[in-house]
Image 1 (cartoon, rainbow, N blue to C red):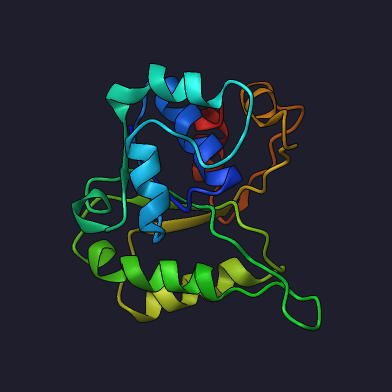
Image 2: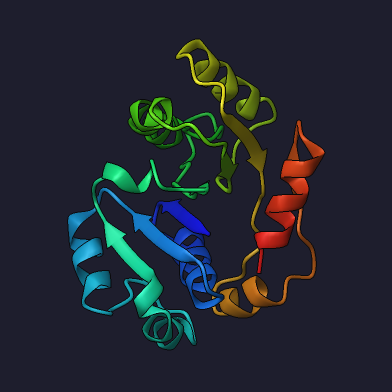
Length: 185
């Protein structure tokens, strides 16, 4: 399966490395060129026991990039794991999430097959509906948006990803929800 992970922070990097380790072709994208340069040299920008070793083991199926390019067109599933820092009022700032969606619209429009868009970022209820509306207004009908929040603990993220005590998936299509549940390590 061709997987794209947008965002290489704690959640995105752990998810991407694990999915590649389990046999998927994964491209992790981030706007931070220095971080991508480190990752391409096999160095993780975060400390997580086992992550660097798993990254080395999955190297043949794991790519890091700063540009969306054709990896979006070839993807089966796209995970959004971008930061949602708090606004002054405490609500999550969704600009990075919306920017990521707007970045991929032209690529999604050129695709013929269904693409599953999975949101792992922390967002308020209703965000998926807003994003789906934007995508549909752009004329894209071959996507399904699913929410899949993470429950990772720093220092235990690899174990939490490989052996989760719960997987939460929500969306408008039961078949797509089952698909996302099955790909989760």
